Length: 160
Image (cartoon, rainbow, N blue to C red; front, side):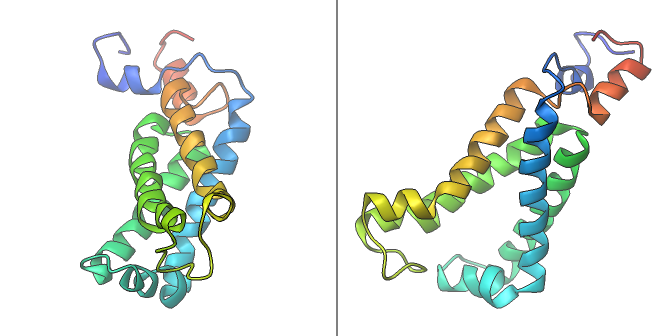
């Protein structure tokens, strides 16, 4: 069932060590919780924040972003379709860095009016950069031994 020509096999197979579970737990939990917070605190983290950043259709984009963060975060946590789930989260983090953090370098940040320059940028973007790096890592290596992806491959008689 799982062979090199099968797209599902290509995205679920992994030779990554079991320790990848630690990266998955961190990255998945942060995305899941941040997605939930977009709904629990819409003025500060959801639609209100997107409005303040002048993101078009904030009432649509913010909840959509929250849904993606919740869904992809949960998939990453359990290690199911991890590579596929990492892709929208990479886009999410690149967008967050470009829209909310990069303007700090120029002193034009809509959310951080009292911050500008390299050191403020590095400080404010640390979690976004960690999430981006973690997501890229998971895209490259896959979910690891302790994951639903690895179980799918094992159950289907695939290689490990």
